[in-house]
Amino acid sequence: MDLSYSTEAEAYRETVSSFLEANWPLKGKEKELSFDEQCTIFRDRATEAGFLYRSIPKQYGGSEQETDALSAQVIREEFGKKWAPMEARGIGTMMLAPTLLERGEQWMKDRWVQKTLFGEIKWCQGYSEPGSGSDLASLKTRGELVGDEWVINGQKIWTTGAHEADFMFILVRTEPDASKHAGISYLLLDMNQPGIEVRPLKTMTGTVDFNEVFFNDARTPKDWIVGKRGEGWAVSRTTLKHERNSIGATEQTNAQFSRLKKLAQETIIDGKPAIEREDIRERLSILEGHILAHKFSGFRQLTKDASGEDPGIIRLMTKLYSTEIGHLVSKLAMDLIGDDGLLGAGDARMGAIPSGNSAWIGQYMYSLGIAIAGGSANIQRNVIAERGLGLPRDAAADRSKSN
Ligand SMILES: Cc1cc2nc3c(=O)[nH]c(=O)nc-3n(C[C@H](O)[C@H](O)[C@H](O)COP(=O)(O)OP(=O)(O)OC[C@H]3O[C@@H](n4cnc5c(N)ncnc54)[C@H](O)[C@@H]3O)c2cc1C
Image (tube, rainbow, N blue to C red; front, top):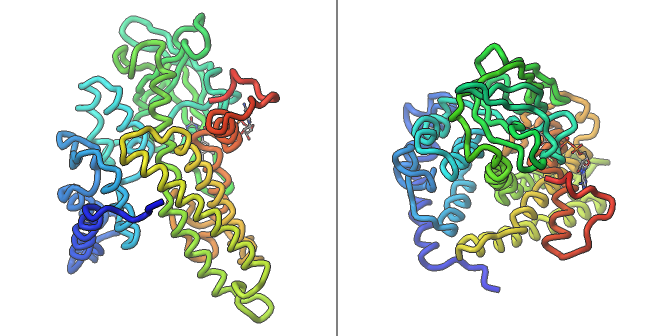
């Protein structure tokens, strides 16, 4: 096995690294701007230089580069070393914009892609319902075509960011007599209308991330449909692929583990640094083993991507592995901080790097949720076992119910 990068990739690394040397962190007066403003300035420059929004056509504000998995990996590594901002992350940028580029009508791309990527409009994802999560295809929210509009009635739940979103992409049942997967359509919907009621749900982190959303004759134009009527399930698989791709970067896991080792060095238990205790060293070593396995699995995915092959089941492993490791890392951190774990939670956003005890609490709580989002860990395990390893089907699970 040869894990070294090609000469061309190493030369490209030099190019990326010199760009970062000159551009991040920002210099002079720009350093006094807010962090968000600095990120925007930097992203514009990095896009101009061809390092960000690489798969996005120039007409939508991207840098439109040739598909090249190795260059993309080099960029992630070099940006990661410098803590430089990558593309803005949000439901719209990570899921809807790529889905529209792959499956949307031209007018939809023109109207929404650029504004979504650059944060001018926000989206939420209306999939899950009470009783329809893993068993998503059983969803009951109805969409009926009345004249030139879809009229929507029903309820969604766990809708991240619905309280701040301008639009929703939603799965609704439009063909009640068809079989369950065949009766679903993928609609786009304006959130600012009287037929929609958003009720925020406060989570244990103390913040509002999720919502219940109720539809009472909500309306959307007939042509705000992605894919054909009744073919929404296939479109939703496209979005899911992008959702899972956004969870699981190995760079993020490595960065969290480095912080954990620092915490173990700085935490004093019984008069000596925790990292010198046998039980802690054992847990750290086991974790490092998982992290290396995740890293090499990431290389397998990269090799497939670089040669234009579909990584298939490896993609699912990446998501599962990273969420499991994230949980184990933050669980050990919680054990190290002891009673401080009773304090309030800090920043629990995806990719936030923990520093300070309250941030670890936030990460721990977040690790419980992210293992469920985008398809729960148990479902992933079943799919990997059956499709990847060829194991017999799980006798206990009703196969009509997994997404
Ligand atoms: C952080 C977070 C963000 C989310 N954001 C959104 C969002 O923006 N929009 C949205 O629509 N939804 C969102 N969700 C909801 C998410 O998609 C669902 O929670 C998820 O699909 C699981 O569904 P459920 O909660 O109904 O659990 P259930 O499906 O009831 O599962 C409960 C348990 O049973 C197991 N199980 C169920 N069926 C099987 C089976 N066939 N085989 C083996 N095990 C099984 C599951 O693994 C799980 O452990 C979010 C969830 C989280 C945690």
